[in-house]
Structure formats: structure tokens, C-alpha cells
Image 1 (cartoon, rainbow, N blue to C red):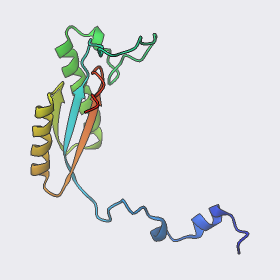
Image 2 (image 1 turned 30 degrees about the vertical axis):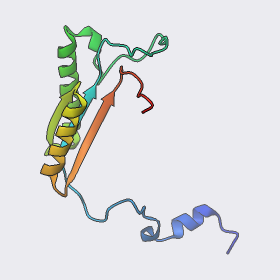
Image 3 (image 1 turned 135 degrees about the vertical axis):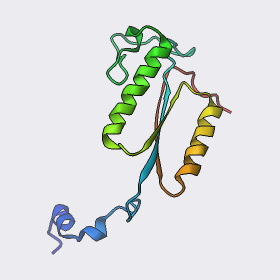
Length: 136
């Protein structure tokens, strides 16, 4: 039967033989969600080329430049993002880290990993407006 199409082979193969190897067999529980936002609102990176206009400006469907202050904009965007995630993961513990330093991020990740033990931690990272990494 070498004349059969690859599609036929795929649909006639038992599901257990084509299941991805990266997927765990048992269900895991997501116990914590880390929402890390490094938005640097109002700050362009020092090595940025001329940016195109018009361009996307909204974060979580909110215009950060339309809010009273940078800090208020960051907090509002963090709250909106958390509300969106809570629709899918209502039982998880949420931690927001808004414009953190590298040490703050490292400490929070270590603490969440310790408290989760063998369960899953979801890390949402959105960062822009920072310089490119150095070669070292």
C-alpha cells in the first residue's frame, strides 16, 4: 500500500503513536502566575532607530500615554492583564512585577519555584523600550 497518501497514514495511525513526546501524561496544576511587565513607558531605547508611524501603542487594549502618569499606566495595564489571565486560571496565585530590576525578578522566580514544588508556574514576560544586550 505504498500508494496511500501521508494524510491517510496520519489518520489511520493510533493516537498513542503520534502523541508528542514533550507532553506529560499526567495533568499538572498551575499554582502561580508571574506577570512581569518591563514596559519602560515613555522611554525609547538609546540605540533605537527611527520608529515608524503609525505604530501599535496599546498594551492590554489600553493606551499608556493616555493615562495620568507612567506609574498609574503601568499599574492599570498590570491589573488588566491579570484580569484577562484570571478568566483562564481563576485559582492560581498572581504576582505582578512592574518594571523590575534583574535581582527582583530573580528573587521572585526563585520564591515562586520553591512554593510551587512539583506544580507548574506560568511566567508572562512583556518587555520593550530597553537597550540591546551587550556582547559579553
